[in-house]
Length: 153
Image (cartoon, rainbow, N blue to C red; front, top):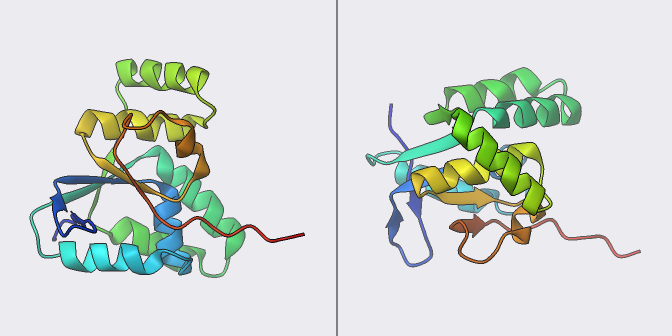
């Protein structure tokens, strides 16, 4: 099965991509930015590059997809599970690092784990999650997909 890679604006290839669940949900729900994910996935399908996700992201994906579209949940989860993604777990030392990161910055446990894993791999973290904006610039390489526009009151 082919692996994925990332083609950035410059056309250069990032060796490793780590996806946050927000990027995958944008792709599945066809939210703003889904076409960027689609182009990346289609360009990368035939290349010898890899895409990773933290195993904890399965929890986030399952919860979101089951709540948002219960009737389509089995199909949506099947698409995710069949994708050529390498699922990562954290080591004990990485769990401690994620806890320290969470203490220093305002972010969820899952997002802290994702950042630690992206740093371990030297990966570009693809997301559309505001929590990653709290990190210092250059702490981790990121590809921000378009955020949802806030409704005016």
